[in-house]
Image (cartoon, rainbow, N blue to C red; front, side):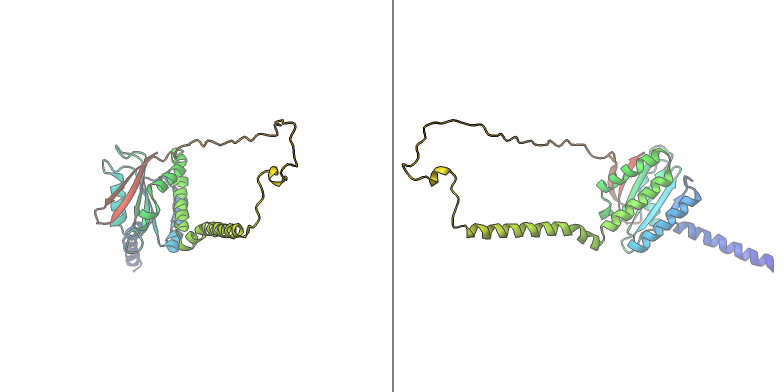
Length: 257
């Protein structure tokens, strides 16, 4: 009886394990993360999904041969049920460690609202943030930085945060309008205007100038700072837009590390 119960339990575990693996948000096939790093990343991503209704997948592979990395990541994302809501809102960080065309390359693949939030410029900025970690083979640091950047960008696009960012602009516009109105009223109230020269106040024939002399009082120097263009970040990735095998639209960015 005990052996039968153990056999049933083992069978259940075998059935449940693939489902759990399929739903994992950290799929480290290249084995570049420790178990602790995987756990922490999974917990953080779970918080993002709950708060922002936005999915995040960390995917690593040793090699995918000659397949195109962004298409591979998009198909993996779609075929394994990732993405939140009807538009499959989400983003995938895909790293390929080896291979001919994909060696040491990262891919950012976005779906749904992720396509609008994570533009090529944003992806370039994130790539600049993770590149030092990738070059040091600190993959846990690279993936953690990516997840933190994703949360930061999502938070900035929340309706209340957008309103807060616009508040200083509204205040400045209001201040400028107030100043313009005040100046308009002030100009209408001027009934006596100051003369521009002292001779305007002298009675005709009462003042005679016997000596003229120019006296140097001061000089005015105007300095202008010439701004130097420091150039863009080192992101410099390639960017694309395509429809995956499942019919879902994606945008992507790829970077050699």
